[in-house]
Length: 315
Image 1 (cartoon, rainbow, N blue to C red):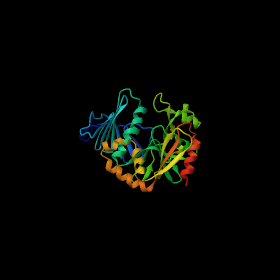
Image 2 (tube, one colour; image 1 turned 45 degrees about the vertical axis):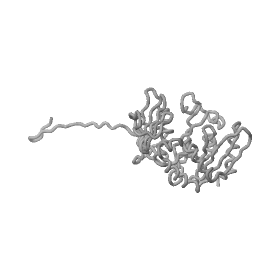
Image 3 (cartoon, rainbow, N blue to C red; image 1 turned 60 degrees about the vertical axis):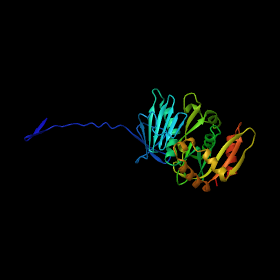
Image 4 (tube, helix red, strand yellow; image 1 turned 90 degrees about the vertical axis):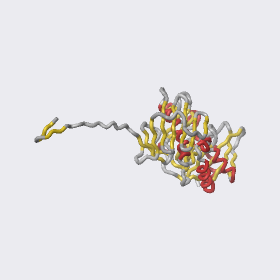
């Protein structure tokens, strides 16, 4: 205690326990997280979305739909991934992540940036498409289709030829009918890396023993939103040659609906109206193609040239 001319005072030292936070931008959203997400680009600004480590609910109160390992209600979504984590997505503005003991951090982030983000986008009334987006000229083209048809493969081929990618696996369309950039990373199988003459030894595996790798595309990443011009739906066949069809009417509508990322979540989250309205707004402004390619062997260069020349992607 110190005294000064008849009065005394105490010095009290207060130490604030300021937990470290990280701020990023992805898919047009500013994201604040209390744990590091190295896949995303660092950013500054007021957050649209908060990601927290914490205790997820055991069960939602008013469940609209049960699924395999998920529960959904209006503005709420709960996902459980065995041995990895539970994810609680609320109001399109918050994700609570509860990792299980012994879970690998990159696997926890894998499902966070996948299904949990997919539910978040739908809660916000956005259109997530299961596909990869490449910049051609001043517009964006999404390559979509079932898992394994070559969405990321053909996008990686175009990257190897100097084109720029906006997103891989999930491409998000906003209400301005633009594809918003995701993050500068692609998920590529080892056989595709070999075709592109990329050494997998320098890359990190997505999951242990999966033979799928994270391919950084920093120099070929386009980080601004672009008007969506084309959606190309890839399917396979057991015969040589490439075929294509431009879709219209109900076939066009159903094709995009079917390739919405985690479409089964739309009804569960009671987002049918928002989803329908955004699709109807988008349909007149874009072209949708169904492209059939050989199951194997597939020449990425032949496929890439066919897509560019047939659909005039560079025009």
